[in-house]
Length: 166
Length: 333
Image (cartoon, rainbow over all chains, first blue to last red; front, side, top):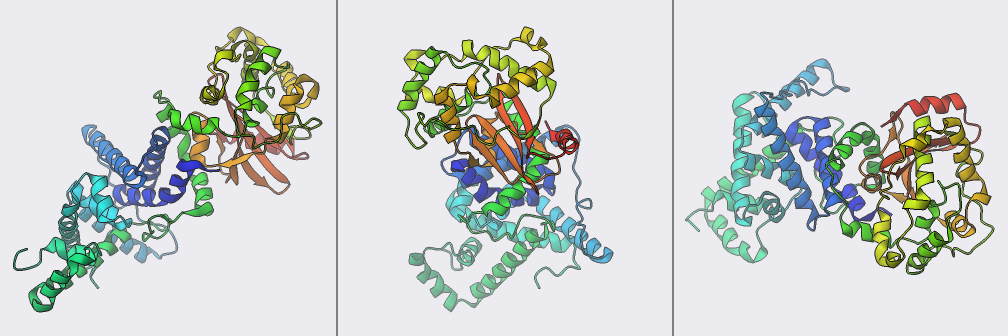
């Protein structure tokens, strides 16, 4: 027996952590926040779980970001998050640069555009994106159009030598 | 609509978000407008490039592919992996959250209250060196009678205690034993249900940890003596009531989810650092994390007693005591 919260955990935890990792660039933070989200879901089971879980998670990220700014801290994880693994040093460096470029481009977006993009990447429908972000359904197409264009253009501006569209 | 399709409409089209009833005019416009067709291709390029950029952010060990369809379960392997990482992050987060004084909603308590009747009374005699008083037994009976008879009948005599303890190595800290002793000695007085509420409606209240007052003076009992008493209480059938024993024997453990375990333990779940649990089980009010061993299974059993989490580590018979001691030192609390 897993119960409804267990089902939620099994169904959404992986997706939530991935979205949070993409958003924060920090796996530990992503997992911590996801855990907090599910702890809140245990305390107050949501009716519409998916938008609820992601909305709470994004709120926590925003709150944490505001606290960091107030405390004069700025997490700079671009280079620190270079992956380790089977890649050679050059490949790892190249990949690290790409990640840093993407993260910088993503951070340059407005909060709304960034979150809409990340939710879409998790397979959210426009309706669910609207519910999660508190936007009108009709605004999502325009939001995503702007977000996608700005992300790609910002990345190209910063990392012109990477041909992302190929 | 303006003379050309808006960019947002183009992205809605690419994302499959335009209802079929609204497609004909859009398709009609695209068929006749080369400029909008070119813009649609641009939008497609931005969509694809944007998707690739976001996927770039994933680390090599990131959770599985980003194209997860809504409603597809992550499955048991993910659940086990989650337990593994949980060993490093959960305790602090859970404790931090629940430490703020949040309570489990009544809806969840009610859900637990309708679980098979054999589970709840089964744990009562576990920590108690004396049989419940007749008043306790009588007060419990109506509540059990109102619950679904999904377990074995309480009257099934001749049952023996499940695997729990006999022949198993066991370790408990002196402090934890003292806590257990406190619980034992205060329960007959404080856990006595009020007859007027000993019914199914009161089941929800029974699902919450008893708010028993602590008895610091009684903690002076020597640990060794406590340990002997604890073993007696769980291994000597003469000390518990027959009905409760039968109920205990009939209670098969339920495999529960990680969040469920956290909820049962008020947000704090102990785990053995560096070991990957096989599952978490609920047995009455006890929650145990099960770790696979070559010689059987290792149980890290935890229970909320007197507002504190008591735990013990038990291994199969023959498991080296020094190994068990080393494992015990890796329990994160």
